[in-house]
Image 1 (cartoon, one colour):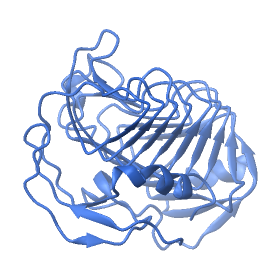
Image 2 (cartoon, helix red, strand yellow):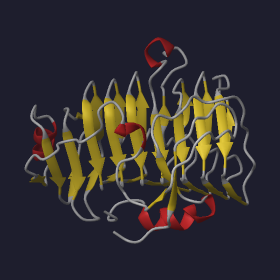
Image 3 (cartoon, rainbow, N blue to C red):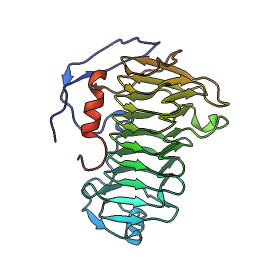
Amino acid sequence: MTKKTLRTAIAVTVLAAGTILGSAPATAASFDLAGWATQGGGTTGGGSAAPVTVSTSSALISAMQSSSPAVIRVSGSIALSGMQKVAANKTILGVGSGAEITGGGLNITKVSNVIVRNLNFRNWSDDAINVQYSTRVWIDHNSFSNGYDGAVDVKRASDYVTVSWNKFSSHDKTMLLGHSDDNGGEDRGKLRVTYHHNWFAGTNQRHPRVRFGNPVHVYNNYYASVGSYGVASTMEAGVLVEGNYFENTKDPFHRGEGSSPAGSLVARNNHFVNSGAGDAGGSVKSLPYSYSLDAAANVASVVRSGAGTGKL
């Protein structure tokens, strides 16, 4: 693993904008699991299951839908048709930097304990990754481009999710968190997701767009030439936006979006280069985990060197 910038580990309780009640000593950077997917028992995917390598769609689907824990190594390019279900206790890991899934996507529905890492997703016809009614999911070090709908959408009472070190490019609707203003009965108290060290390279909107989730944690991401907006907090959401690097991004974050009313958004320690100031307000619930935070001014270089496929 390449040497990264030293980070400061911070255990925080956020009561209102900019309030930090505790801190911990500095720790070294790593690609280890962090954030919400460490909660609820943690996320281990297929664990110690013997790895199996697949190179065809039929082999991938069979392995993903097995009822047994599995570590699935994806080799080469695999074309999927539509959304293919992923069963519980799975690790899906691309081999090298060229492993890719094209045409279709992964449907992580009504399961728990799933890891997706080091895959290129291209030209999907629905979502690249759809997470619904699922918990303990880690989506890490993937690259997404030129798809139809969401790259990584999380919705319908899902919880304990981390989206980290991914690269998103040439895409419009990047990440939705919570699909409807009318789904509060299922979503309140859930939809807790951490987004960190992701690289948004010329994407347009939803980085993420949040409903109901509180606290949602958006830290140390690199927003480069984002078109419409970066982060939107709506419909009872509480989003902590900290230590991010916004470059050539006119609207880095705001409250409310479309017909959805404003949620709460706390912003602190972000870095802005030729970008707007953003719109923040309200308070966010406390985070239950500690985490390592890069200085915002260093995030562009840290993320460019570490995000996307081929970096593990």
